[in-house]
Image (cartoon, rainbow, N blue to C red; front, side, top):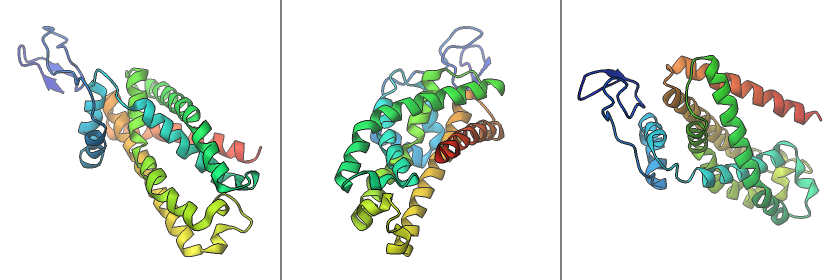
Length: 230
């Protein structure tokens, strides 16, 4: 809660204008710097998400959503062993770069809508724009994996990282498991950031934010399993 400097009224953490005397209790943030915001997500994620929500211009959320889509497409290629559909790894990577941005923006929008919808059951009141921004920035660790881990995976396994003929686990089991471990850490980190971001944007206690993201994750997991068996 934030105390109004004029009348002393207690306001929510994200309030800009006091609900009692209409005085300004905190300033809006004009712009977001990408690199300082990313560092803030590492150093002080809750304070950084608050800054993201209070910003007038939600800078870089479209870029982050597009890049997340590229990572998501490559993950789908790996999950579905779809490397066999491409003549070489360059075509596979090119396809990800081509369709990934659109898929990423759609997925981020759907994810933000779903989380906002579930959060309202728990008493949340955030806008879709703020939830979209939180979702996009929460995916930064996945983008770390895209930039730093995927090139190593492709350099070592080539197209076979996305195929099972032969399985990459047979080609180099220790390296394959280690690289997947880094990917898993990135996903779990993004998931934890999404919980914290949901906590901040909706003003939840941590258990309630955890429950909201847990429900959303379960729904997405069921959808992924359904696609696996189609």
